[in-house]
Length: 215
Image (cartoon, rainbow, N blue to C red):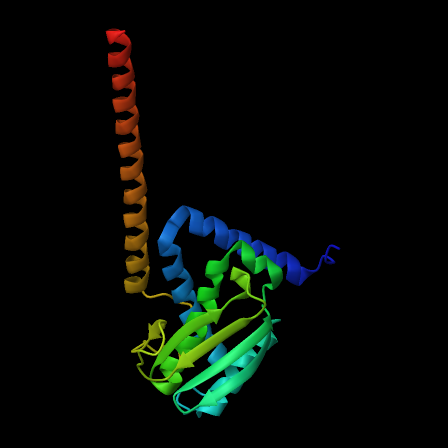
């Protein structure tokens, strides 16, 4: 049975297809773009919950990240709260089933959760233990507030905080140049690969001609 068409479903499909295309064209560097977007989006979302300088408890942090996800259509809940970490689980993704079209969008969850942890708790290490995007029945995410070797994960620390009069979505030149440089490297890598393929093609044709002349 097909789902009913809605604005949310259409937007989710549009975003995931854009992300899929972006990953195919930019390659592995697409993850860094998603990471930066998540960090900045998380900072903007924080402004809906409190002042930038307000200190949060672990319980408050857990409540906020779950509320963020549920406010945009997810089905998240707090599973565990400890002084050094929080575990949240989900039965539904804000992007729905279409997130399977672009599983690297999960990096947005990691960078939003990790970025907020870094700013509010001083440090964040995020491990996406389970993901609907990868075929799991639900999502499970752990966020550590101090360095640990217990699990692998993406680390977020020493993040710049936008001044109160600023806008986290106004990208500074350094960030733009850095991402642009990554994209340029990716383009050069693709061009180099194409050149190598052309050389290989010529070698094959030469070998074929040589073999033919010997027969």
